[in-house]
Each structure stands twice: as structure tokens, then as C-alpha cells.
Length: 291
Image 1 (tube, rainbow, N blue to C red):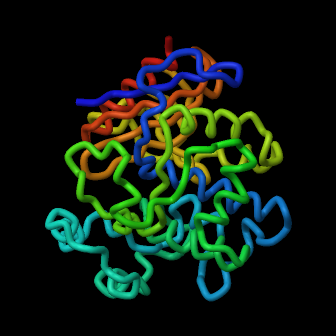
Image 2 (image 1 turned 135 degrees about the vertical axis):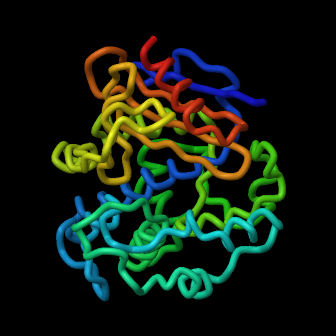
């Protein structure tokens, strides 16, 4: 098993192991998508609480998984196709398989993790900026935060030098909102710089980290009081840390990227493992933060 990590304090990596390893960021991509969308809010190009054109939800609903849109995580045919090594379905086919036009609940009246919601966020970013998603993320977030290694993987060849564990033939198109890849150290540094406030206003950062409280503790995972902000998993761990960031997992590996938000511990960490055990990956990250 491969394990790699980077711990950032005072803006620099102070501890790490194999921190320059190129890895999939999985759902940590959502944090970057949310940051890009909030840059557009900062610049007055979209409202956080205004209805998204053509949809009965707001940007806040999409970013916080409260839009009512379906998720493909529980779709058996999806996992079977990934397991066979198939090429990704076209987006219309995915949406048809999910009956995605049918909201699972009225926007703002429930919570359900939705990769489809973040597909819509990515489409909004492309529409507003006029750039494809990779170029938009580079302009809005990655270059301003000096994240040189990160890029969207579009095809299998884009993962040829990326540590994928047992999923060496994975097609990144199965992550419909986009799959960022980058070094472990750049994941930690990006979150550290983002939450230090160099990109967003203090008001937008507060919005990003204000959680919608979820039922806790989370069985078999190190979350005592879990919550979800805007593109961030945020709350209190079973070890007493208050953290904000994101866990991401897919075939063959997981990554946990978090910053301590006060109290015991300090710093920002990215912890990667070639295992699909999210709990162990989170435990490794929180242990480093706890010191």
C-alpha cells in the first residue's frame, strides 16, 4: 500500500512523506469547484441565493448538496460499468438512467450528497466564464493560489503518471463533475491558502465553512459532529478537532484534505492512501493535525 502526506503550517510544508506524488484528488475537486463558484459570486457574476437559470434551486443549494438532485453513487449499473472498464456514458445517458429531472425533495428541504449537483456547478462555471472547466479552474483558483501541479484529467492517458492503486485502467470521465489530479503537497497548500483568505472575502469564507449539520456520530468514521458547508466537509472529529476540508475516494484510493479550524491542533494536511477505506485515510489526516 502507498501512503503519502503533507502537513502545512505557516504557509509551508513542515512534514511529509512522498508529498510530491501525483494522485487523484477525487471529491476534494468539489472544494475547488466551490471556490471557483464563490469567486464568481465575489465578482458579482452570480448570486449565491438567487435561482439558477432553468432550475428550481440556488447556487447555495447546489454547493451544499441541498438541491434535491439525484446522485449516481447508488446506481448499480454505474458501478458495474466502472468495474468492467467501460468508457463513461454520455451525460444525457447518465441523467436518463437516474431519472435526474425528478427532484428527490424540494430544494432546501433536505440533504443528500449529489455528484450531479456538482456537475451542474461545473456547467455553470463554464457558461459564466466562457472557458472549458479546466481553463476556468486554472484562471479562477489554481493559478491565483499558485497550485502548479493540478489539472483536470479528461482521458485515461491523463492518469498515466498518477498513482491509482488497483484502478490503473480507470477512466476519469466517470467523475462527471471533473477529476482534478495533483501532488499531495499541492492539495494541502491549496486548502491552506484558500482558507487563509487570499482568494475569497472573509464573508464568503465564513459561508463556505458554515455547516449544515448532519446526524452524528458517523458510524465507523472519525466524525463526532459532521456537517457540510459550501464544498467543504466541516465539523468536529471524534478526537475533538474542528476541521474543514474534504475527503475523496474512488476505485483504488482515497484522499483526505483538511485544515484545523481552532482548538487543539493546527495546520493543514493532505493524506493519501491506495485503499478505499475512507475512515483510515481520515484518521491518518486527523492524527497529523492533532500532532
